[in-house]
Amino acid sequence: MASQSSDPAAEAAAMEAALAAARTFNITLWTLYAFGVLVTALRTYSRFLQVGFKNFDVDDYLAWVAILLYSLQTTLGYEIGNLAHGMANNGMTDAQRAALSPLDPEWDMRVIGSKIQVAGWTSYSTLMAVLKFAMLFFYLRLTNGLGSKYRLRVHAGFALVAAGYIASVGAVLLSCLPFHKYWQINPNPGMLCQPAISPSVVWASFAANLSTDIYLIVIPLPLLWGSRLRLMEKIGSTLVLGAGIFVLVCATLKTVFVVIDDVNGAELAGAWGTREAFVAVITTNLPMVFPLVKSWLKPIFGSYFSRGTSDNYKTPKDGFETIGGGRVGEDGSRSRGKATKNTRNTRSTNPLTNVTFTESEERIMMDEMKQGNLKIRTNAVVSADKDGHAKCEGHGNGQQTSLAPKGIVVHTEFNVAEDSSSQHHSEISQAQPAKAHEPW
Image (tube, rainbow, N blue to C red):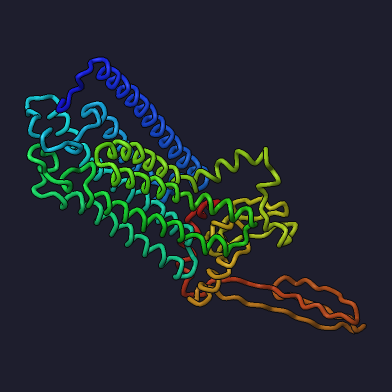
C-alpha cells in the first residue's frame, strides 16, 4: 500500500474491519437486488392478470430492460469491492502517487477501480433514464383519452428526461480528455479525471435527477386530485405515485457525501447509490404492484378497499355497459362485454378512478361525436287516449305506458350508432377483442 501502518496489530484490526464492512455491503447489495427483481416480477404478473401478455405496453418491457441495467449496476458495485477493494485514483496525495509503483498490486486495483467507476456512472445514468421513461409511458396510459394539456405534460417529461440523460452521460464522456486520464495514477490527473468524485459528473447527475424526479412526481397530481376517489384513496395513491421522492433523497445524500469528503465520500456515495438504484426500481413498479397487493389484502380489509364512488351513483338492477365494453352490475362487479355493431370498443379513458361514470369517459364520448363518428338520436312520443290518460311510446320498442291524468312522463330512448362513413371501421373493430380493464 502507499501508506503503511507501523503497528501490525492496528493494521490487522483495520483489515478485519474493512473485510467486515465489505461483507455487510455485499449482503445488502444482493439482498436489495433480489428484492428489486422480485418486485419487477410481481409487476409483470399483475399486468398479466390485468391485460394479458398480448396487451403489454412499452413500460412493461422497459421494466425488464431496467432490470438488466440494474444487474450490471449491482455487479459493478460488487466488483469494485471484490477486485478494487473500494479504491480508485482518488484519495491520494501527490507524494503517495509518486511513491506507488506500477508493479504494486495497489496500482492495478486503483486502475480497475477507476474504470469501474466510469462504467458505473454510465450504467447508473442509463438505468435512471430507462426507469423514468417507463414511468412516463405509464403516465401516457393513465392519461389516455384525456385532454391534450395532460398529455402535453407527459411529452414534456420525455424531453426533460432525455435532456438530463444526455447531460449526465455527456459529463462522463467529456469531462476528462483524453479519456484514459480517468484511470491515471501519477501524475495527479486532477479532480475532473477522478471519476469517483469528479465534480462535473456528480453535479450533472444530481441536477438531472433533481429536475426529473420532481417533475415526475408532479405530473399525476392534478389528475389524481381531480378524480372522484375518496380522500384517503387520493392520499394513498399520492404516496404510491409520489414515492420517487425517496429516490431524490438518496441522490441528495450521495452527492453530499462526495462533496464534503473527497477521500471516504466515494465509498459512502457508492452505498447510497446502491440504495438509490433499488428505490428507483421499486417506485417505478409500485403503481402496477399496488393493485395486486390490494387484491390480496381485500379479503382482510374488505370494506376499506370498496370504491368510495359507489354511493354516488345507483346502478340499474340489470347493470349497464361501460364505454370499454365491461358490464357493471348492481353490486358493482364488472364483466367483460362483447362489442356490437352499434357500439364502439373503447376502454375507459381514465383508468386511475376505476369508476364507470367519469369526466374522462364523458369527454371521449364528446370527442367522438365531434369527429362525426357517432350519432345520438332521442325519440319520445307522448299521446293521450280517449279517457284522457297519457300514453308514452318509445320509438322502436313498441312499448306503451299509461300515466295518471295529471302527470306526463316522457319516455326517452337513446340510440348510439355509427354513421355510414365509419361502417367499415365498425366491421373491423368487431373482430378485435375488447381491451382488458386496468385498475390504474
